[in-house]
Length: 323
Image 1 (cartoon, rainbow, N blue to C red):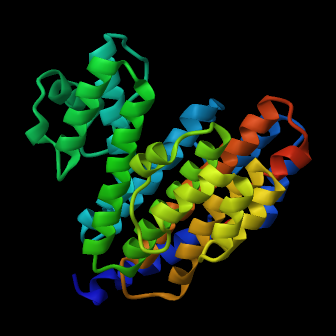
Image 2: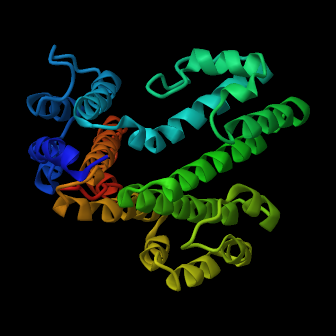
């Protein structure tokens, strides 16, 4: 795709970026004393379906839909964005495998806005049509299915599918000509590996478990990180200090919510340079990721207000904004 093909699309996205939440607007949301005030402010900003509905889940879902409507209208090549839907696609696989193997139906457990819908995924799993799945997904699906059927170990099933998702994201990054997709893939896998290490240390998982769950990438050594996690949280921090993720060590020291916030902020650092790029798909991908982060932040604030958390407690979880 020629760089010039993106000139108009990037110009439109630049205009749309002006409607993204700034830090000061997030402060206004935080200052609202009640959930209803937050929803009113969001409605005034144009969030939701325009009917005045104040249903939180509907409002946030509609914002996700709007993001992709814009991208489908603007992008010369939608295949570039496939990698961003992999987490939802592999979630659908996990949900389908569990539903078929346990014969317990869940409500609203599928994402419909990806290449294989919930019903399609259920059909594939029921019929064991692994060849219908893209790339190495079929292999992971068969392994997860057999594992859950014979061991009833839901966590091991999750590990198999989640690892396959990370591998797929990383492979897509390596194949992509777009720098932002390569950077997104590297950051996504590295941060996921660090999260696995932290959770595994807290739950006393074995090195073998961690190696099975983590995916290879350039900026993190699965071998060294899993050994560090087995040795303790201080060892994880020491390892991270020698990597590109040294700030994660400081966040870990602070608190678990500070660490989760750092993980998302790290992705924002990855995409922010795209603000100065006018002739590639980069700004469009950055806009999608910025919107996802914005919606996640709003969800955190609304959930905090619903549950009566203090402003300080909510603030600790707030992500950095793109604008």
